Amino acid sequence: MSASSDKTILVCHGAWSGGWSWKKMFPLMQAAGYRLVVPTYTGLGEREHLAHPAIDLETHIQDILSVIKFENLSDFILLGHSYGGMVATGVADRCRDRISQLVYLDAFVPRDGQSLLDLNEPARAGMEALTKSGDGWRVPPNPTPPDTPAADLDWLIRRRVPMPLKCFQMKLKLTNGETALPRSYIYATRITPADTFGQFSKRAQSEDGWRHFEIDASHSPHVTAPDALMGVLRKIVE
Image 1 (cartoon, helix red, strand yellow):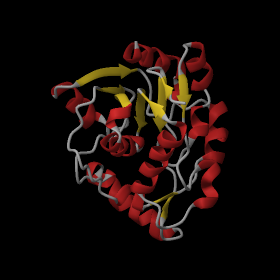
Image 2: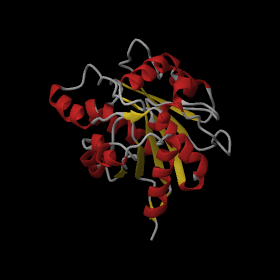
Image 3: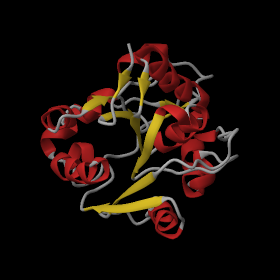
């Protein structure tokens, strides 16, 4: 039986995170009549025990492709948050016939042959140094946004776990080139000084095939501004 619905949203979550981090969005999605699916990548969250040095971007792309296969998803919206934009781009390249549209939530939007560190060169030295000072293959989590509610800090800190460096180093290989799927970019306007995602916001505003939205929130609105995020997603879906 096919789980076909243009109101199914499959999320590729961000780095160091997991499906657990989207818990505030589930009741909002359900109330709006949407089905939210947020699998956790291998080696993170409740799958932390599976972590090993060889995990890379391809592992996480395969995680999402397997969910699509075994849940028999079709005609769904694929959403990538942050690092999840790398994953979502790879997934869409391989099963674009099942996806109705792509949504990037303050996310990386790679082209063929680019890694996350290619798109965030200032972070390269720091990540590699942190890896060397630890177990040699995992990067500890970045700090949470400064406006994260105090009530959420302990919840986040206890669950965010280090992530294999190879996930950030591996270059994405696209076999079908730039996608022709409808794409939307949601830019979180409470930026850090680095404004890592401003480059993708500008791209979405200058290239054909994109819709561009802004949200008055920091980098993880599914945690810090769930109602505002739900409002933007409703505009995109409906």
